Length: 251
Image (cartoon, rainbow, N blue to C red; front, side, top):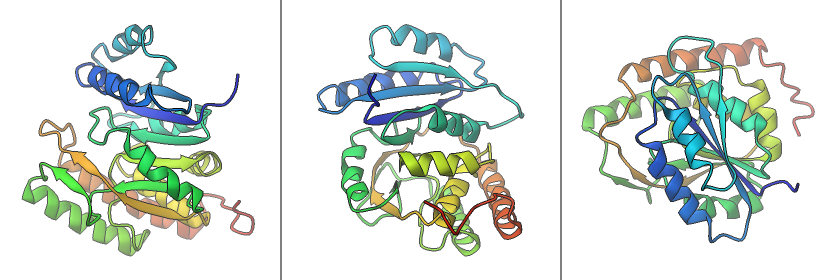
């Protein structure tokens, strides 16, 4: 069986209600494309019937696969789910997106030209001047996000204006090398994979996004604090050589 062109990884924790519409939208938008794809739903520790929903939908949505990720730590395991999905995926390009479909899958077509220009990581950015937020986040979340991003830029990622938008695509090589090294399970995993990409010498491109804000978002205010704590860990691990990166031969 030939390798799919695109792998879509969707981490899912208690997403039985939101996930079906997302999967149907992905299938509708990609069914007319001339490239092959697979969809990996990475269910992690759900207390609802997320897994059952995906199993039922796999009967009608081609190449939809359910992977149940063992939960090894309390709290958010999104980073672990994405990591496992990226390493299990077979696609020439590997993309992860959120279960709420805040960023629709057709954004991948806007990313693809940048891979042809030599970028190995292409990410959607809500801070891009051409992005459209529908609706905008509450002012207090915007302020917290801007302060958090400033700290992240100072510590590990200068020039990257939105590390947390949940729509990121990687070439096969970049995905396998970056996620093999990653170790953050919580909200800071986005920062970690981008910091590793930079350390490995991969070019990163930010592109505009039409981002649909879910007013019922499950992300709590504490996520900002845990992300910054994770960022401090990443900075320390980079300084101390924890990642065992061969910078002489990154590619």
